[in-house]
Image (tube, rainbow, N blue to C red; front, side):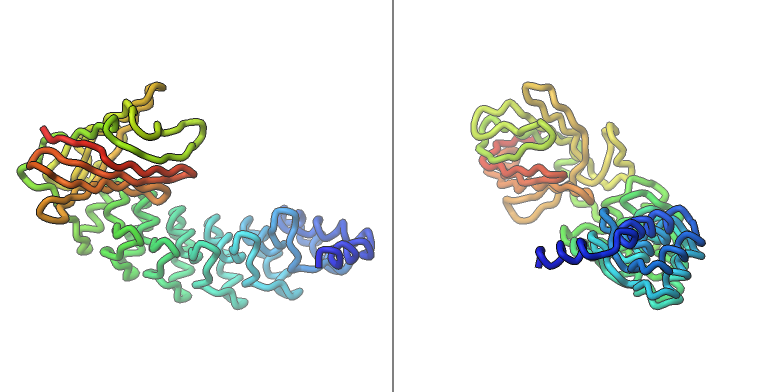
Length: 345
């Protein structure tokens, strides 16, 4: 097959090979007359360029509506996936191109088409806060409660980016405020916006307060020097493996779910912790976790962002101490630890 493709390229007229790349450039730059000339010379309107994009992809992403219509008139496929599994409508939605989205939908673009990650065009619009194109998609039947492969809905993606106007639009359009992703998290978990949290709560979102009153205000400290673990490297930073780690992590628990989870705030969230994770390089981080009792002698601490996660499983051998395991990952790194001693004071 590779040999056949090579031979095909050899026998193509030289001008046709050159004009194929030029078609995408002309479409991206809004050169309508140039696009018509290149097509007239025989260019394939559905061919991919070196970056895996069609001319229709380029035109839609840059809102070249006249060229979008011209390409469609010459046989461009409105649902052809590029190398990322995205159709032109995904790109128009991602860039907030309402006019191009309307033109594509009028010519048969699938409003609920999925890319390789299971994202719909509405999810891209929601994630980037483009309410204009979101309204276009919703008016044409976009599924407001569809989920990606990871279980993310348009609402959870908008909440993660604190897109208040988008969250309001999705709620008004029937978004399920208690829909959970594959990690069991709702939109309320991801947002850092007070206004978004209020909107979600007013729409019926269940915001659980799980920290037992007996632990409120106390601190859980994990001692990694007692642990054994496996880890991976990310950007030059490597978690210490096996015994001897100097990393200690402290968690300050609060009794209620405060919506303010901004970096560095000590009163942040249901089961909040202030974490100081240090190794020989002096690494330090602050974030927030949720605490949940899972059994008579067990509990769980979890944090999750769209791109990462971390989970502690706690096993108490007294009311104030025990042994934990920790697993997490994100952005190319991952870790698993067991035998971590913890205490609560």
